[in-house]
Length: 84
Image 1 (cartoon, rainbow, N blue to C red):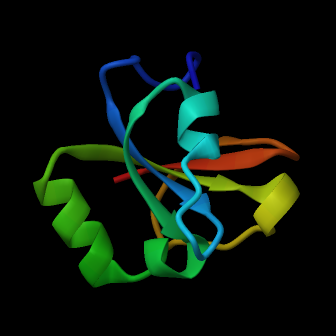
Image 2 (image 1 turned 180 degrees about the vertical axis):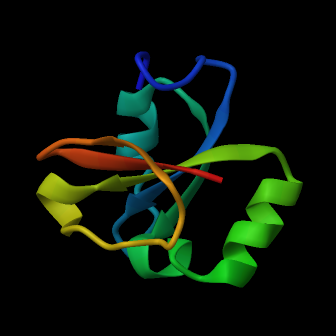
């Protein structure tokens, strides 16, 4: 994440259904934790962007990949980062 964004940037990151914050902690960022399918919803994207969210992060190694319909700014075997 440090190569893509500043630590002050708010992000939304994929997690399990119970909204486990572990991935957010590991990213060293603040923001929102959602199931990955919710992050692909345009209405959710609109709401979190209006609240200051800059990036959506999909953790692929644990949760699988999903295209959220936004420009990719980083992609690896472990995670994909999309620009809101």
